[in-house]
Figure 1 (tube, rainbow, N blue to C red):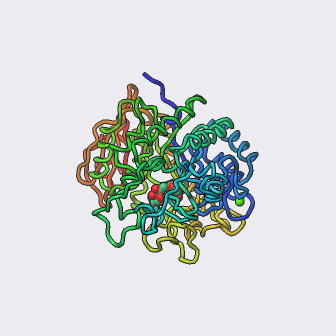
Figure 2: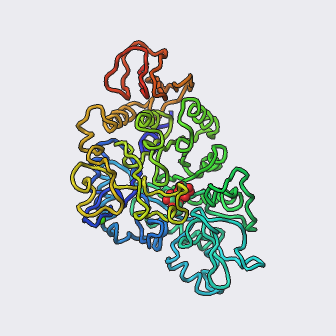
Figure 3: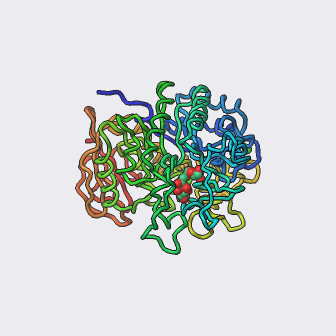
Length: 518
Ligand code: TEU
Ligand code: CA
């Protein structure tokens, strides 16, 4: 049997660095702050830490607009802080995944400043410049993911940006761009990082003819600008796979490293990112649990379809939250959030947790005058804003929730005095202790972290499946309803339940899940 790799058996944990831990009282999380919390992460039992961008940035999109790929923004610290953090992570046997943003730079990046300086600049072709349409308007109908045209006029031409106008898209058809960006990967790999999560992997290259996108027949006046068209010609182009393979080759030349792709795609397209001969991304992020209805049938269908679409030898993965999506506890409710925990940590494939999920953090409503996210500012009221899921981590009930001694950059949850790590640690039946037990059970049992999945079935409100290897067999039974249900279960006690007080009968209580060892 092939041995299991660290990123297969282990759990990944996403940190949004502005919001995890502030070390200097300016209200913004930083690298030293993350270092202060490593014992918490090691104790929780996760394996890989993914930190969202901390590079120099004008912060138009909070770090996803990068003006220097090979340094640390002073808000977050210094390269020395980074090296110290990486060493501390490795000392604990953990791994570090960085965020790589290849699709676009900041408009303040020296490359773009040079590119826009003249039509004949040697870096003109590093970005996507086009002449205006005959009527003087944008070259085609591609829209920005944050609303409005994807084209901004600068001098006599337009440049394309999939996101803000402060985030011009790089031209990945240009070999010099590839070389410069692969050098960025090498810069961090040389320092010892264990892998990358690649931002908008499916958007990296666009149609060479810049054809118009077709109208999305399902769109309504209420949908966001980007949902009004089908992104046929500006995303998921066939040429993207060559770039992914080249990135993977750069990582492989450093040994055991991990390439993750951010990909919002249906399964049959998603799995193409594993690449021919599995030479693409090892983990094309599977976001389907974030987008599906939460009932036993819908989730059984997702599991079955995903497993069926996986290429031979491809390793699955699951995500229930990230810094762009409503928090799971808000989306499905606090009852189902426990089921979500049990599901995420017992499915076959690498789980990725989002900071705060383990304490059941919910979206925090942000008053209009405190909105930070450009996605909300550009298209107010369309549900595009991401501030609610980016609020500071709740560590304790003290001032600043233990996150900061200053004024947090984004307001804290009103319930932080109850929902926080310190308080929940002492409540036996808290969601935090459920996460801890689930993680421990998963880490200690190969059947759960790397075994097969069998017998996925949905009956009424109950989802069940088994996880199996040569040494063990576990049965997972999850009730997705807020009402009790009577189901056939083994007569013995469960090894773990979402509810502490097990009646030991054949009734699952509202939103109860149980794990049996068979
Ligand atoms: O997100 C890409 C992306 O598709 C998001 O725009 C997502 O669809 C949206 O936020 C859902 O509400 C990545 C990063 O994760 C995001 O934070 C960045 O803003 C974006 O790329 C641009 O770099
Ligand atoms: Ca700080």
